[in-house]
Image (cartoon, rainbow over all chains, first blue to last red; front, side, top):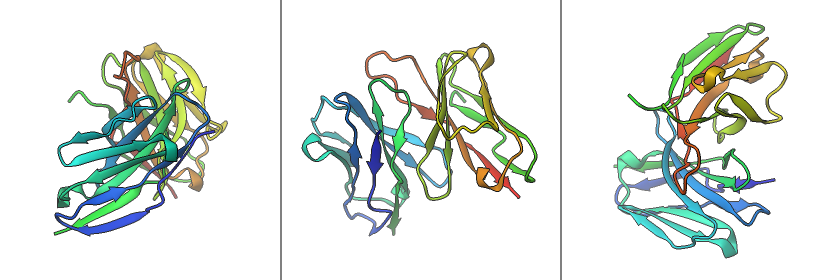
Length: 114
Length: 116
């Protein structure tokens, strides 16, 4: 069975601070995919990134960056120079290669204060 | 709007009543998923369709729940004899058939169910 743990339930930062959201996953499969989704107050989950288990190269997209480390089964997400609009709940998710369902973590609520 | 749409957005019902939700996926997405999200939790998988075939069901999907996807287009999720524990946000997602890296799931806005 798969499991995703987001130990930080809530984080509060002041605008322009950097913040890292942690994600730890468990799976016995060697081929799997990791995702991050953002859920703003409107409720709709917005896809941010997908990584496969064979690609440990870190990725940067604007103020967002992701650090994938198989050795520690972690896929952490960093927002640089946070903005109020980044306030949302962020979910990490896992899908094994043979499956179709996403297994989500419990989410981290990020509050960015002006 | 070419995203996933769900109707209704909100539903309030009394315990014991039946409710039905509808999901319209992104056109040409042949895969459709239903998830349930309770307050403060991450979404939990319920069921998955590829075209009109229901290929996977979670143990969370009790006998009171049924999902259909006639003709492989829109999908409906029905809950019979609703219970207060059914109160949640029901999310629908769709994805194209896997071609390389393009298989991420796109989510709709959800239907929030409140059972009184």
